[in-house]
Length: 167
Image (cartoon, rainbow, N blue to C red; front, top):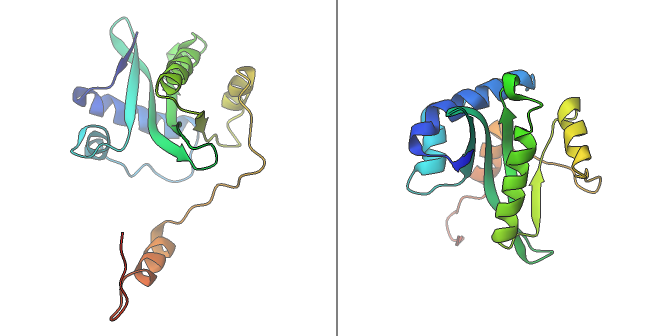
């Protein structure tokens, strides 16, 4: 069964996020806390959504996603941030079921795309996605500002005397 995540799921979602990072040998520690997940999904200004797949009433997998927008096609999209199936349920079809659920949600919402990122080192996931006919994008390089470079650029964009900034 796949169902929308509820506030009571914040603890299990956080645990799954940590398990996912460990399984992928993701570089760097997970710094998100359970409260961060709860705030992002269920706070006053939710920025993401999640669904939980259960087996015999127990959470076995999840997908966390958020809306995007393409100026090129003039339509919204969905970005899959995390897809995780606990080790004992891998190969059972839960991953495919979660992706099919998100694809259906994207179609229902009028989205032009369902997109996600995959670590280049995650060969099992890459094989799985390619079997679904997902394609890699050679024309895009993922860029990121974080830490001190993010703060430095932010400081450079702050208003100075006599200069007006509008958001």
